[in-house]
Amino acid sequence: MSVADSRRQDTAEAAVRARPPRAVRFVRHLWRLIMLAAFVAIVAFGVGFLWFVGNVPTDEVTIDRPADGIVVLTGGASRIADAMELLAAGRGKRLLISGVHPTTSSSELARLSPAYGRWMTCCVDLGHAAVNTTGNAIETEQWVTDRGFHSVIVVTSNYHMPRTMAELRRRMPDVALVPFPVVTDKMRSEAWWSSPPTAKLLFSEYLKYIVAQVRFRVGAASAAASVSGRRAA
Image (cartoon, rainbow, N blue to C red):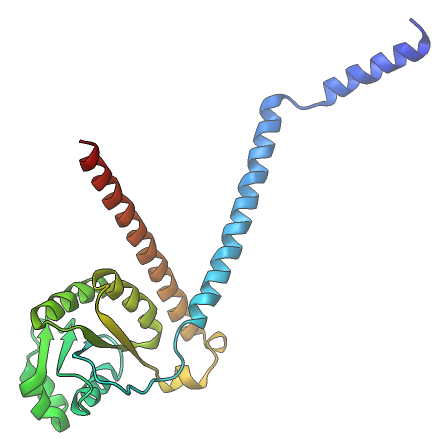
């Protein structure tokens, strides 16, 4: 063997010895894929949050056409007052206040809103069963079905509106839903990124919105699998 051939053989053997074992290469490759997936997930999460914030209404709307009914979800400032104003203006035949505390009665609410006592007596229904947004949607669906309504004005805080509409549309796809977002003066006058409490509120609501969307998709997939199983049987 020539000196050149011997050197080439030594170089090849050294390269083989220097090459990491297959298991090590696999772990390194897997780690790179995990890091890439994590980076993509973080970017997607951030973009999704910006999309969510962009879809949160920043101005209250004007309702030009009346609907069959009005539903307001308790839990935020000015929600009930704005809903009562809509009812008094003839924007709906009846109002459902969803998520009312079990011990709260119509007479107590009437005392809190004396200007709307007449409408509170004749045209307001209280829903005591709901304890969260999903419960609000169930309560509203039952109320709409019982009343035979085909259109509903939905009153809730602006940051809560995307998740509320998603929950309601899932349960009432054939009912026309008109959002009426309640916007506080603070959220109207300040940029969300300049206010830590507002940013925290929006981020928390975004997480809840994601959880709701995942629940919808899991439920739809389970229902489809159940239907396929029954057909196969």
